[in-house]
Length: 333
Image (cartoon, rainbow, N blue to C red):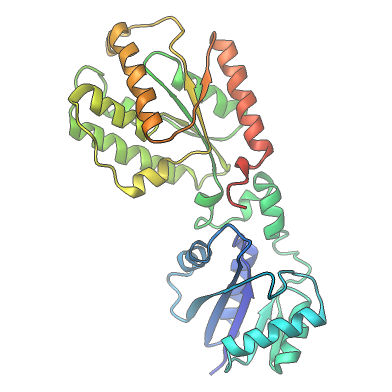
C-alpha cells in the first residue's frame, strides 16, 4: 500500500492545489494533505481544512490534517532551500512516519523527499497548467477569481450592501453599480415575496430572510468576486419590529451569508414617490429611524449617501473603488 502526502499553507487553497491533490490521488492508495498554519496568519486552520474537505468530500482515501506552528520556532517560507527543507523534513517524519511518497509542485520537494529518504513526484512545477499562486490571489482576487474553488469563494468575496428606507433608490442604484463594475447583483428578495409593504406576515419575513441569504450564497459562486446586494437581513428585522413589534430569530448561517465589507446607507433626502404599494411618507421616515437603530444595535458601520441621484451614484462608485483598491480591506490576510 502506497501512502503519500502533500503539504502547504493553502492560503488560500486554489485550483492548482486541487489539481495537484487529484494527481497525487492517482499515485497512491492513501493520501494525507497536511495544512501548515503559523501563528502569524489570520485565516484559521479550521477554515483552510474545511476548504479542502468540501472540495474532496466524495473522496474516501483523502485525510486532511493540520499542523500549527510558531514562526519564531519554524521558518515560514516557500523558498527552495536545503537548510529549510531539512527542518521541515524532520517535522514531516514525525507527523507522517510511515509515508513513502511526497507530491509537490515546488523544487524544494526534491530536497524534502531526499532528506526523508522517500520518493518525490513533481506536479507542474512551472505552473503552466494553473498559472496561479496563493500570493497572487491575495494580491489581486479579481484577476485570480477563476482559480478559486467554490469552497473558497465565500471567504474571498467582496460584498457591498445598499441600504435605506423605502423610495430612496436602492434597487436602481444597485443595478447601476453592478453594470458599472461588471459584477454580480443580488436583488432584494422581498420585492417578489412581499408585493405590498402594507400587507404581509411574519412568516413572509422569514421567507424573505431565507431566500435572500440563498441568493447571496449562490451569487458568490459567479464570475466576479464583487457582489452588489440590494438590502440585507437587518432591514428585514427592522420591518418585523416596525410592523409587528416582533424580533425575528435568525440563524447564524443566514447572518453569515449577509455579512458584508461595505454598507452604503441611502439618506431619505430625496423626493418620495408613492407607487401604491409603499408605506406613507411619514411611515417610511419613521422606518428610516428604526433601520438606523437596528444597524447600530448590530454594530454595523454605515457610509451615508446623500444628495441627488447623480451624486449618490458618484459617491457609491467612489466608496466601492476604495474598497476594491484594498481587496475588500484585506479581511482575509
